[in-house]
Length: 230
Image (cartoon, rainbow, N blue to C red; front, side, top):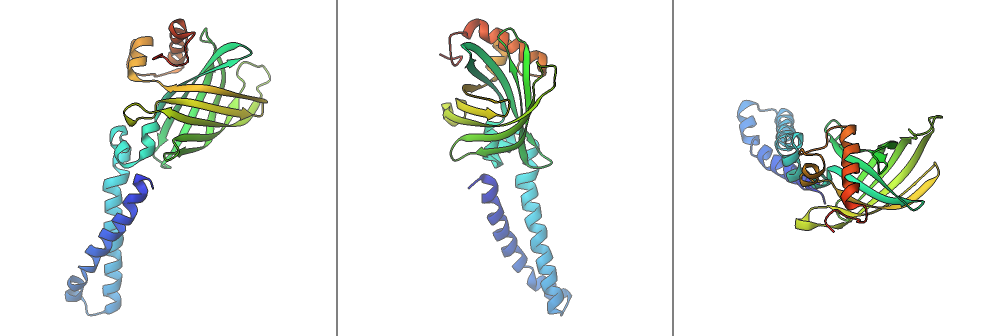
């Protein structure tokens, strides 16, 4: 059960207890049992909404507090994917971000060559973060940016986390299949602030130019490694 699902029954319980204690108050204002029942119900709803707002919706506005109320938030961030296609080492950078308007996550990615050349790009139309099995499954629609015909493709990607230093999801192996058609296994690792400082000389990735520089600099020192810490 997620942190969000824990909050809802607690909020319902607290709202029920507090609202039941207001029955005597409403009884002093009106003698109508129907009106007392309505006022008690409205009180319960208001208290429930206030609890959810204070402990769920407001904290989700910020990354640090979102991690307290939503276990999915630990997976947020940029990831570097590494795979070999036709004996050539290829990369991709994907970004998993939170959409507060829907309370869901979205993902975007771009493939990048060893020299920083931008290739395929894609965005998710469905994302499932399984915090129990420690995996992300998403469906994506992409565009072959390196072709002149502008071909669109659809696909599904699985990211299975296997390395959890300090209990944080950091890296693992994944697999994708799409309608290009193409399919492949890949390794992935979360891009940390330390990685950005080493390869970008700043604390975070901000734009597509950073994507290209990051991959080029990473490849220079890690061309024979799967993960940067090896």
